[in-house]
Length: 374
Ligand code: GLY
Picture: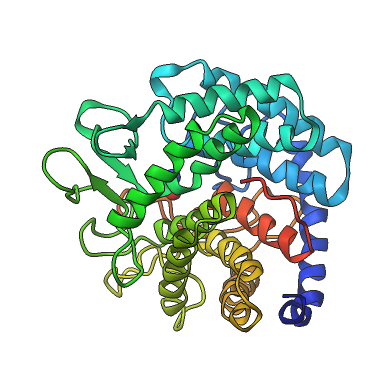
């Protein structure tokens, strides 16, 4: 892989320098926050709102990546405070949902992997138990969200939460968490991944067979192709392969990645939905940074002659996002602009903390960082 990455080394070093300078300022301004966006240039704070949103672990994740790469204790200190604040969500049983992995892998999970510690271990096992308890034994899936009308719903995003279950099995040496994760991944492979490599965002297992409900963050639930959902598939199936060694997850990740790469031929910055009408144009930089992380992991796994495709796919997106959509000014809290939370809902052109997180994770990988927080 090194060979294919070499030409990008000066770019990676230059961008990292700007990120490091910026994050040193942002970390102090946001030391007491759990941010989600920085629409006005300043991070908002979910500590002041209802803690437990799926995005609430990404700030801790950024802090841990920065700690890993710089060794600066201040990052660790702030990340550890963040992890404690998230306990409010862990004790809010009725609001916990399928997104426990996003929240606790990047906070308690990272802390535990690096330093051990009973408190972090407890958080991981509590969150994993709640995630595993969402498994529907009859239909073999982990249910998404809460509420009676959604009891048959599964979403592709959940592929990114499965590593919490793999980690819980590693810690406890009890296979049941992993068995739940694998059963869900098998169902997702069968029912979310279309033959052409694109994915359904949401499927419904309620009733006879599998149906597609009228719900998506993309343009259209039945026929369109929500780019961030596609990124969750690329990275999520890759992670299930890395944790289990099961080749069918690798094949699924490659199929999803090939579809993604085919859809960035014209525009290297992913649209919010690859099959939306030509107008309006909504980009989703967060889909690009996340998919790039998945592709960089894929490039490490596949044989030498396959690596170039995934490295080029990832680098096309990262370089374009860096060129046109990044703000490296240390005086603002925005890093990556033009994320799209959802196609319909007026939530476009936003800086999103997970867009920032995956941009930094991609740089961390490109600099040779080996720790996988997922
Ligand atoms: N997990 C929700 C999203 O990707 O927006």
